[in-house]
Image 1 (cartoon, rainbow, N blue to C red):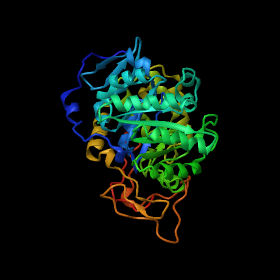
Image 2: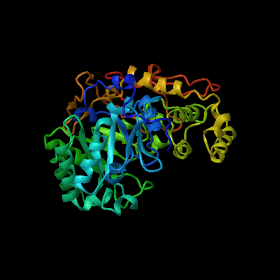
Image 3: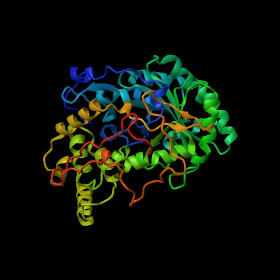
Length: 436
């Protein structure tokens, strides 16, 4: 992917924003996170997720060997940092997301994993090892889900990463369930003892696919087991969460410290807000395209991401939405979307995201405190009120098409249809919401 010009340092203003405390295990608790997704986890998607309330964001899996040969360049106009291969940018980021960005590595070699992590560690806040991807491009080289059957290698990679990374860089892992709960617990125990800060469990086995219901009920025993180890490690649930309004249900079932979202975020990056965007063809799509063009995001990658967007239609007719999709399918570059986007004011879109992140830092976003298995309120954040579901009531079910809005204080007015701009959706601050 061609860049406008080359540099080795971000603009001074962008670098100044990074003066934040580094991540700790506590930052992985009581949050809602963007999952690592190949292609769909592109920079514009991560920025929109942060704008709308994601606490942390994972980048797409990058294979260790590929990163070792990448050239790091910085666009002096936008501040975008690109790790370029021979013909394209393999991974892009921006300093504004660094305090919230976890870089996921695909590896089957401790030395290569460390080298790749050192290559990017100045641009990220954490390194995550992919131990769960079941796709052949990952498992054929012994990476991803193949590591689940090679725990010695898996743990040696995590141990090496923790030993070689500076203390301000967190190390975490993302696994899948093993068919046997006993074997899963044995593996989890070994992983936790490597010194990681967080463990994400995709509640499907290696042979299960997205169409199969995630067995999230298996996670509670794993959470209790990890808490019993007394290391303060966060356990993150992944699988079948629909968004912010569904996170409480998932945590009630699993006891997980946080929830990670993949498919729902792929369909609508604003799902991290209690009031996700609707009519996305006229709210999200134009803004996303403007931002992607401003950041010089690859057109093919941008087109793929936009094609995945789905949402409820309130003020947009189905015929109009279909027409937009047809234009997208036929477009071969950004100018092909002129009639959808109107004015290409990408810098304004970017500045709005930066303002939203700085005004309401994502790491301050907290879900309500939950009940531990013993029935005692767990206080994850000292600033949160100790609130539980009132006696005699039930936690809300996942919202359907007729689900009510949250209280008026967290409603947002959709932007005027003629502007096509994505307004910032409000995200609860600590103590702001009793229950979801």
